[in-house]
Structures are given as C-alpha cells and as structure tokens.
Length: 266
Image 1 (spheres, rainbow, N blue to C red):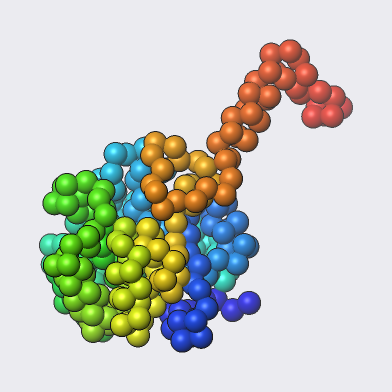
Image 2: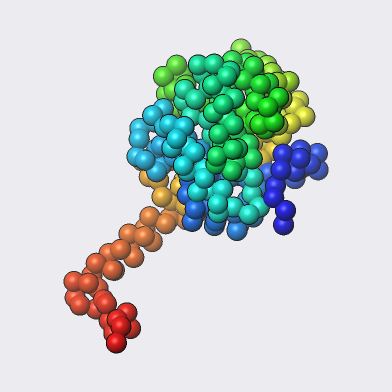
C-alpha cells in the first residue's frame, strides 16, 4: 500500500469515503496505528497532556514536537504524518511560522503540518503552501487559545459565532489549506461547513457529517483518565490491562516465581 497523500484526502472526499486519523507520539504506538490501516497520524501537541502530564498544551516546544514526530515517522510506512505547530511557533511572525513548519518536513519526516486558526493565520497558510508545506487548518475549539476562550468549551453555539466559523473555514480554504480540522462545534454547523468546502473536513467532537474523524489515541485505548470528553468513544482499557500485568509481575518476584529456570541461563 503506497503512502497516503493530500491527493488521497481530496479523492476520499470526492468519493464520499471517510478519512481516518489518530494521534500518536512514539515509535511503538505509531507502528500499531499504521498497521491498523489508519489514513493519517497527527503528532499532536496534546502530547503535553497525555504523555508529559501537563495541564494544557501551551508549554510544549518545537524541539519536543520535532523529537516526537521523528519517532512516529520512523515507524510509519503508509499513513500520512502530520506535525502539530505548538504554541508560539507561528504566532510571532509569518517568517517564524514557515521556518518552524519546514522543520517538520525537513528534520522530522512529516508530510504536512497542522496550525490552529483561520483568518488570523491566513497569511501563514499562504506562505507555507507557497513553500510547498501542506497545511491542515484547525478551527472551533483551539486548545492553544484556552485562556481567551475561558477553557475547553463548545464553540459556534450562537448564530453570530456560527457565521464567524463558516467565514473562517472559507478563509482557510482560500489561503491554501488542504484540509480543515473542526473541533467541538455543533454537528449541523460542521455539516454545513463540510458541504460548502471543496477540501475535506476532519472532526473531533464535531459530529458524524465531517469527511473524516480524529481522536487522541490515549483516549481511544484507555490510557488517559484525567478527563474524558463527551465526544470520545473508548474502545479498550489498556490501563487496567497494564496495571494487572505489573501487579502480577510484582507478585511473582515477591514469591520467587520469577525468574524461573525458563528465564535463566544454564
């Protein structure tokens, strides 16, 4: 199976085939996600919360994002790898944005980047696209803006807010984004945006009408329990499995059952 490209994203939308996406942050999990046939892996700055134990994504650095994206890229054979632009890697200037975005492709092996925002980053998207850096735009609930938004809240609930998000979506498309991530917005608004745009939409907490879906891997497999968003569906509970295995290991050592002769050299 050849590597998934931005052209495959467009083709899936035109053929009304759903795009599948998950996050991953290291080699072993990226290998599993890729083997499962997922179309794209987002190396999200969500790693700050689910891997580093931070309260939000704001402290995550470019160097940390490059480090994790490198590991994911090494593991992946088919999925598109998308690097997430962390806080203050693009806000200061268009020039900073292009240079940092380029690092994901040049140093980390990603095929595209994701950037939060619509109108306010339109010039950034244009400049990146002009530099042959494919861009996924991210609107709705944008976690890097939690202080301005007053926390992790559903966006686009009023008529005025909905009109603004629709406008943002079109601006992102016109600027050259190859796809649009919609987070925590009403499903009918997501449906309208999806129908109006020629580029594919990827939803997270945006209902079933988007062209594709993404979730945080650790939410899907039950490795993150600090909070579980309404839009998450848990498909496994690996924490329980891991906890049981480690307790069994501890017990075997304490009672002298491990290592046995089978785990020893003669």
